[in-house]
Image (cartoon, rainbow, N blue to C red; front, side, top):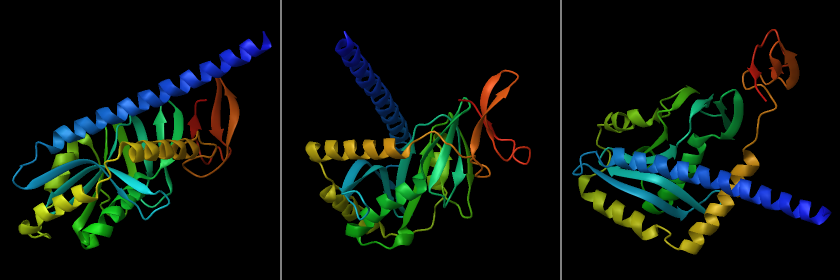
Length: 249
């Protein structure tokens, strides 16, 4: 009986993890399809849209996978898609950002830095100046963004993506080079299903290790402690009353 209970528990955990990962994957695919639809509405004679590219990386991972690339005379737009909801806040140069969904705070890797790795992967074989690359991180319209930035770091909602791209109107790449750039990207694209599946699993494990519920206040860095209020238990900043940050469990 004891072993049956243990076995049943293990099956339950495995199924639960599968459902969570499958749901997250479907949500990501849905976001990428929405961004693809937006990008395809750009003038076809000025912008070349390329989706789902995987190239060799100079970072810790062997490969880097890019959601969307738009090649134009105004630059090469490298777009990272995040189909998140709730409130997202962070700083341009910080290691992690935070997502708040119904009072629950989850940290995730800074997508600006993530997209920088994508750009470096492209730059390695395109041999194009860094200033010709434009990084954009696009979040779902259901996401409220609060990003601290010193420069224009191009973090936008889906609805503002097209406008953001079209705001660049200075020619930095000769029109005669666009097809050559497109062909080179396709040439270096890793198409192997085995390599892509392996990369996806490595990234998923890395995300799960990095993604965790916060134990420190995202506002002041103070440790979060369990407190009891009028309506039950909650997490509050130890630096109260100077900091009044709270979070549900």
